[in-house]
View (cartoon, rainbow, N blue to C red):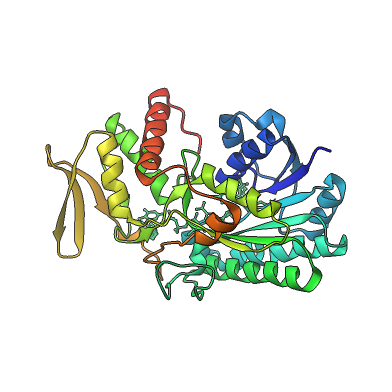
Length: 344
Ligand code: NAP
Ligand code: GDD
């Protein structure tokens, strides 16, 4: 029988990759979208799956809406990807972020509980829960120390997922995913800001990319690899929590250097007191400048994941390395900028 999946947050980066992945596996895919004043299905279009998924209206703020959608669509698996996912915004909108990223998850879990414990449930947890990390690399046993309202809200929903598994026998998995990127990444995140910025510099449409903390380190993987891990977790007989990461970490500074190489520029750095700039070693032109307004009130400085449990139990391994990821992102943005097509 055809399996049915409901993806919340289907209009986001991971929603597009997961839709494509599940459709290829033969799933009927329902995608929950919240009401917005303009159409935001550009990623699904670019992925070529918009006509193959069935969109349903659902907002994580509204439990009656969630109940009706789950009862009507009767999914076998729910992938909860919906969230206010931008860490920086969570400092300005902590209550909204807590409601959607925290309580919103309990709304879904309560609905599943009231339906007798099915469907299976995947929660999009995050390495941001490690925050001021107590050890490196981080694994499933590393203590959490979130540094943002986003991280705190996600930690609440992580533990709710564990609690509903243990209390009510729900097949509920929490995927603790480290940063994953792609050409479909939102423009506010640093990797995409850099890849698009480099493409614009190459095409004479921009001079400088303004960034915040250049020394923050992230374990960056490819979103296409990470959605496979979500699915693998849901296929296990026993639900559990898994770290998904590449096991390599790089600074924002290094990401910018690698991205500049793709457009043929070698960056050198010039530090003068508190101000710093990155410039082209041939022309001397500044292409990176530091703007403290992008700094966070409390920073997650270093993330590095140990995904050995997922490798052993799920047979999951990332296929795309750091250099290929950076190249993929800059090259896609170069194509888009040339065609004047930058939608997200
Ligand atoms: P994204 O591109 O920002 O997508 C977020 C999705 O959530 C969008 O579809 C958005 O809809 C939807 N959404 C926001 N508020 C909602 C609400 N109130 N009701 C219903 N839907 C709502 O995020 P992503 O990168 O794909 O990440 C997917 C999930 O994984 C998120 O939960 C994120 O926190 C988590 N995560 C991401 C990473 C990463 O590195 N990408 C790592 C760890 C965990 P609109 O299109 O209408 O805005
Ligand atoms: N966004 C942004 N913009 N970040 C910058 C900038 C800038 O101009 N300059 C430096 N950074 C630094 C941030 O301070 C942070 O340390 C790092 O770059 C990464 O920032 P983001 O790309 O915004 O991602 P994030 O790590 O905060 O959050 C992402 O990954 C989490 C998993 O760890 C999001 O996808 C979250 O939803 C996800 O949970």
